[in-house]
Amino acid sequence: MTAARRLPLLAALSLSALLAACATTPPPKPLSQGRGAWSFAPANRSESAKLAYGIPNSDDVGLMLLCAQPRVKIWMSQPAAAPPKKIALRSGKAHGVYPLAPEGEALLQATMPAADPVLDAFAASGELIADQTRLDARAANERAAIRAFRGACPAKTR
Amino acid sequence: MAEPHLIYFADPMCSWCYGFSPVIAEIRRAYGRALPIKLILGGLRPGTTEPMSQKARDELAGHWTHVQEATGLPFNRAAIDGEGFLYDTDPGARAVVRVRREDPELALTYLGRLQAAFYGEGLDITRPEILADLAAEFGIDREAFLADLDSRDLKQETWGDYGTSQRAGVTGFPTLVAGPNQDGAYGVVTRGFAPGDQVLAVLNQWIEGAVAQH
Image (cartoon, each protein chain N blue to C red):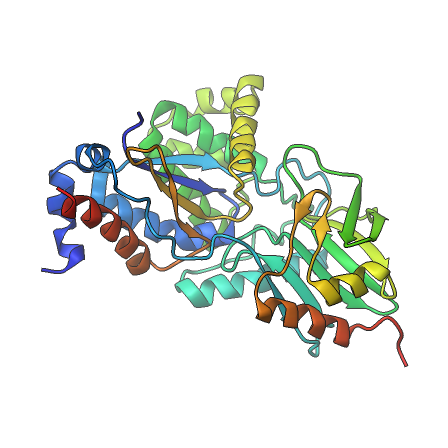
């Protein structure tokens, strides 16, 4: 009998009583990492290079950087409780505060210079704090994605 | 201690939650009331006051194609193409909380109905009369529903959900959590969309682990 076919039987046994009675039953093993990740999208015909932090297959991108030389556009999800008036980014000792664009949409928007030291520090370390939230890259492929974005959107254009 | 249950963090105007709604229905069919699902509204974009630009509408519709490819569900962009459309998730969330007051199980069904209406049928679920019409499909008193929709206490209750979601560290929707065990521990089943067979496999493994220990 497959696990799926056993479900109604298990339900009949009262899952509540069963699970509550087991002192050592571990919580379920998650399908996903349970955290966001950085991903890079190279420039294409309709859009320039993009770097986004978010949980895959979910709504609410935490932060997105879009190359718009000589600047970089920043999109950040809007906290429900107290939307900030600026976007603050910090990577190591480099930090910047960027005023929100007047055109409000679903996400908070601001821009930063492509030559901003925060971007260099972020590319070097993979560490970033957006307002008070740590969005550090933890996996090698995330750090590679960040470096790829910096490569596609450098501080100085030729 | 609370009975074991699932906690579902979602939003009526969250496209991946729309994609996840058949999975939630599948879980409900499999377990019924033996494993209740508590719904917490996440607050995706509440309180937006600026109409969407054409560029933002196109970007949003472009994002929907990913959900469509993963789930096969239909999408209709008529609502977001409406003149002056405000992507404010708060009215829909309040409507779900209003239904939840009457029947928590029905709130899950109503949430799925709102998502199908917005994404699949192109109905603007930021409009109170549409929310009321959809609630009336489930026998909710339309006039009482409309009277409550803008009430202060309903807003407070809904924003209380958003606060719960934030305190739980839920930053993306859908998120499904299961627990507690005897130690009071909860575990993440999935953050983000996952197919029904994978989600049910995780839940089955959890339950069979409990069976094996008896």
